[in-house]
Amino acid sequence: MLTFVLLIALQQCYAIQLTMYTVPWCGHCQKLKAELDKSTFVPTLNEWNIGHSVNEAGPLLAPKLAVDVSFVNCEEEKEVCESVGVFGYPEIVASVEPVEEAEADARNDDALLAPFVHASLSQLPLKYPGRDRSAAAIGEWIRSLASPPALLVSSLADGYTSLDRRVDSPVLTLTCANLDQRLSFLRDQETALLPLIVDATTVGTPLLSLVDDGVDACRLAYQASLDATPTVLPPAAATGGALATWLADARTPLCDEHSIAAYGLGRPFLFMHLIADDLANDPSSASAQAHATLCTVSSALRAENVSLRFAWLSHKKWSGTRAGLSGKVYPSVHIDDIRHVNSRYVLPEDVDLTGKEGVRALTTFARAFEAGELTKARVSEPVPEDDVEEAGRVRSLVLSSFDEAVLGRPHGTLVMFHSPSCGTCQTTYPVFEGLAREFAAQWPSTLRFARANAWENDWQFDVTGVPDFRYFAPDGTVTEYHDTDFTAEGLGAWIENVLGVSRKVAKSEL
Image 1 (cartoon, helix red, strand yellow):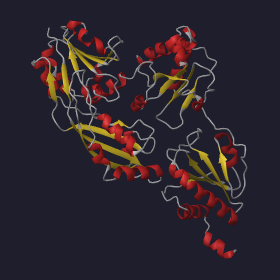
Image 2 (tube, rainbow, N blue to C red; image 1 turned 180 degrees about the vertical axis):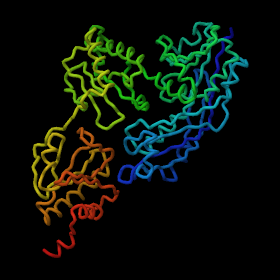
Image 3 (cartoon, rainbow, N blue to C red; image 1 turned 60 degrees about the vertical axis):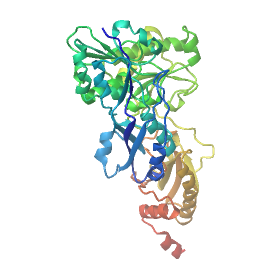
Image 4 (cartoon, one colour; image 1 turned 30 degrees about the vertical axis):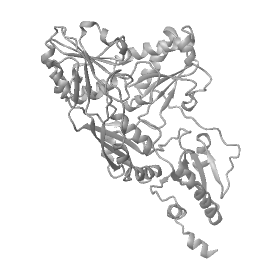
C-alpha cells in the first residue's frame, strides 16, 4: 500500500460575502454599518498578506481576498433573518467561496492525489463569534477565514508514524475498499468535507487519513486527535450540507475547556465551572473528579443526539455569578442556551458532582433541559443605594426593583436600556436627563424616567440592542422606540406622541 503525504496550498484567492443583519433602531448597527460601508474597508483587507507555514519547511502562502459587503434590514426581511437564525443585532455572517484552482505540492506523484488537487472549497455561512463588533475586529476575523491550512493525507500502513509530531491535530478517516476508485466520494458530496477540515478555528494542522480495509461500504469518522475516540458519520448524514453540519458538530469537543469558536454552532452549552489548577495538578480534587463526570455524561448523551454540548470554564475567567451562581462554590454547573436571550439554567450548588451520584445528577439536569422542564435563572444587579423615585430625576433600575417601580403605577415610565460599554448610550444619556427635567417641569405626575443595564440583568423581555427605549404605560402596554434619532428633538417628539401632548402648547399656556 502506498504511503503518501499531500500538502495543498488551497485556493489563494477567496470571494467572501460579508452580510450584516441589522434593524433601524440599533444605534451600534448604524455606526458599524457606516464603518463597513467606507470605501477603505475592503481595500484594507485586500492589502493584507498572511505568512502561513504549511509545515516546518513549507512555503509561505499569501491569499488575496475579494470581499463584498451587504446589509439586511430585519424589520423588512424578517423571513430571511429567521432563516439565518439572527437573535441579536448586529449579526455578522460570512460566506467564503474560492475563485481559483488549488495548487498542490505532491510529495508522491500518484493519481490518488488528483481529486484533492482540484477539489473545490466552499465554506458554510459562518457567524462572527466575537464580542468586539468593530470594523477592525471583523476585518481580522475575515482574514482568519482565508488562513490556508495544509491537508496531510496518509495511509494506515505506517500506523500514523509519519504523523506522530501532529498527534494533537484533528483527524478525519475515510475507510472503504478500492480506495483509489472511491476518492470521488468527497466530490460527490459537494466537497462538504473540505471546508470543515480547513475551518480556521481548528488548532493545529488538520489531517485526513485514507484507509483501504477491503470493506465495500465507505465510512467516515472524526477524531479530535489521533488517540481520541472516533465519531462515525451516520448514513443519513452522508450528503452535501448534512455531511458538513455533522462534521462541524462532531468537531465540538466532549468536555474540553470552552472556546468562543464553539458558539458558532448555535447550540446550548452545559458549562462546568472548575478550579483549573486543581484540574491540572490534583487528580483527587473535586474539580478533577467533577470533570471526569462531565466527560462521562457528555459522551453518553452525545450518543443520544441531545442538543446540548459540554465544556468547562476556569473559575478565574468566569465565576458564574452572571448565570446565577454564587461564584463561591466550585465545581458548579449552569446551562446557557444562546439560541434565546437571557436563557440560563442553574444546577443547585449543593449537588455532589463526583462519582456515580454526580453522573446521575448531571444526566438528570441535562435531560430536564432537553425536555423543557427547567426554570430560567433570573439574575439582578444589586439595588442602588440612592434608588429614589423623583420627578425630573433618572432613576436606576435593576431586575429586582423593576416590577414595583414600573408596573401598575399611576404614571407611565420611560426606560432607557443601556450598556456602559456602548458609546452611543454614553452620548445619549445627557439628552435623556435633559428630557426628564423638561417633561417633569410640565407634567410632573404623568411620566417618570429610568435607566437600566441591558446586559447585567435577566429581563423578562428581549433586549437585543442598545440603547433601547421603552415606554411602560399605566395600563400595562409597552411602546418601543424604533428610530435612530437620539437627539432631544427626535426622542422628545416620540415622547410627545406616546403621551398625546405637545410641549409647545404646554409652554404657551404657562
